[in-house]
Length: 91
Image 1 (cartoon, rainbow, N blue to C red):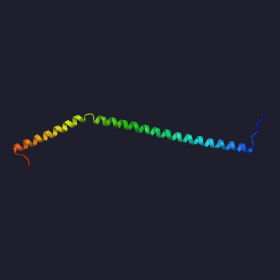
Image 2: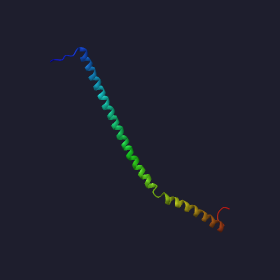
Image 3: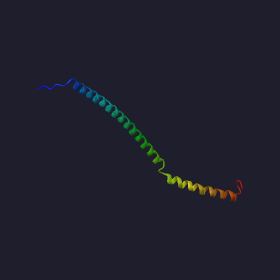
Image 4: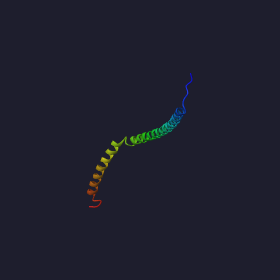
């Protein structure tokens, strides 16, 4: 049994195959672009993680720094008292 296609049907299938090939190429291009963007984002996330660890290291002793700042205020007050008692400095 032989099935024959008319010229119209053959043209229809050729057009469908060309459209399918164009869609396939477009999908491949878009997936390649997506993969590139994901890799770029991944690299940025890793760098951001490194920066966050650096910030965490810099702020690990913030309580000590705040205590020192409070102590400096007390030292400045004591220095002013000594200067006043000794008659040193502007009045």
